[in-house]
Image 1 (cartoon, rainbow, N blue to C red):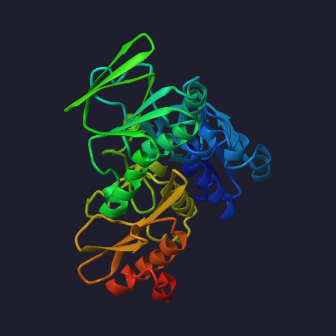
Image 2: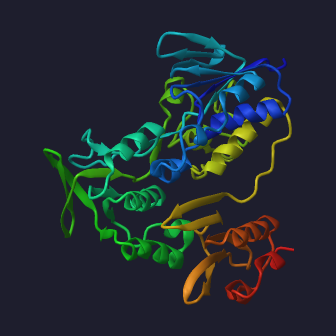
Length: 403
């Protein structure tokens, strides 16, 4: 039976990409996106340009109202509360009931809370959606003391933006340096040093409690003096939103389990983006991915599968981040056996490459090296064996090695 309608629960990048790809692949049936936040918007700018106020609400929208009208994609304000997969039914919190041939869950992930005393105080902030960014921007002003727990991508980006807005920033993380799994040891050290070099107080330690007295917060940190701050923001990762899927009887395990087609354990339901986790035919569970490109790619894959078309082939996973005026990119994986080759320039590490035991490149990360990462990604995808000495030599153009 030909597909006639699709309901997408969630309007982030993954849900938007699914809808857009359905249309670009020629689907003429009904497409409905359900989301409580209205027009889908891009989340990476929330800790950067949007928080700084250099990009507006309109400028971070993934598409304007007129695009959805032209494409015949219905945007429905609301939140899915329950599914009836056998019947293709989505029940909304306000009691409305929608029916479609297939359902796509793009429910995303929620910011992880600290499981310590005071970790759930209503004044302990997070940065996951546009409302969080709006709230934080209103609170940040010159001289305000902001403590950020978690120095990963979100924590580091927010620290950089808050510093630019005049805040006195303290960055707390139990690991020194953070981001080694993403960029390798050498680049991780360089990136983490940037915080102190620009005036951010950096503390290595494990927070054990947060207390509040009036407007002041105190953070107890193992092996360190307490940190006092006006504002506390936690950026320690996310938790996939699996409740809707689990309540409908779908298989979940730190994510909604899907196959290579993004199909869940129920044939009528697909899942994409941060909430989805791939289960291989032999039962192996892959690590759940949380990057922007992964959200876009899984939406593209789900659309192709829904239309019974050949699945798209995606390259090595790619991510990016910005802090203190530098741009960080990575592709593939920097975690695993083998060796890491670091390229230096003027005494500073600028790129790292992970090679497996056969000499094939498996991962790359670079600071202000977009062309390097693009070339390295081609090398990874083509399974090219490269000379480590040439990788380490800043005078060798990587794109020549990718031919």
